[in-house]
Image 1 (tube, rainbow, N blue to C red):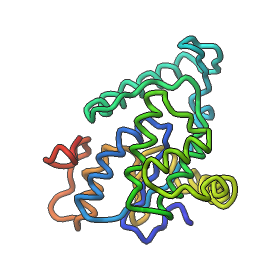
Image 2: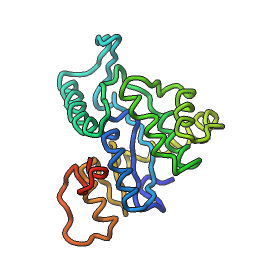
Image 3: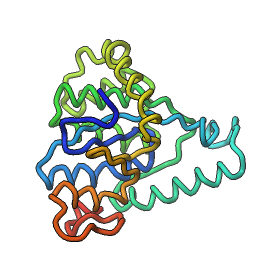
Image 4: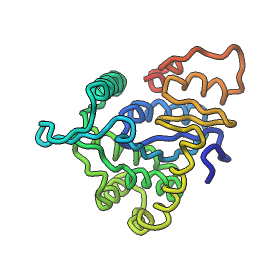
Length: 230
């Protein structure tokens, strides 16, 4: 797997622990359905401490932090920003109490893609909302298996996959991302073009529909239908 190449019309990079990816899942799935296409969904497991420092809370109280005041302000703004769009979709978004290793849940994306592609949206439904309500331990393989089962995806063999082939594929892909110019989520890739952020969905749609008429402005809404625009 090469970071910028796919037989699908669009590559979509997401991370379960990203609030911005959470805000983008529903409109991106809606676009996929509206265009009757199948996107290539891939995991990008963010290394948040490398650029925003690390922090951990216990029972709501900060017990460990390497973040500067500036980094804390960036984190707080990101949550406020993403929360605006998540709540419009009827979801809850609570700040996490630690920086999670989301690689197992992200490997679940690859498992769903190869095992039952049509149930990928159901997997996102089983993972994203409860995680952002602080109800899900995404570092626990058994928990991720339960999410796959909830999505009606056969989880038999997932544990071995997550510790073997799936882990190797995940790690090999992650090593390619930064050198390829992919740094955050959601990221959309087509024809070598890399677009970071849900606000590029209008342009993505325009491109996938044949680039008819003038290119749209950057915006969070991608159409008139609420199911697509939210």
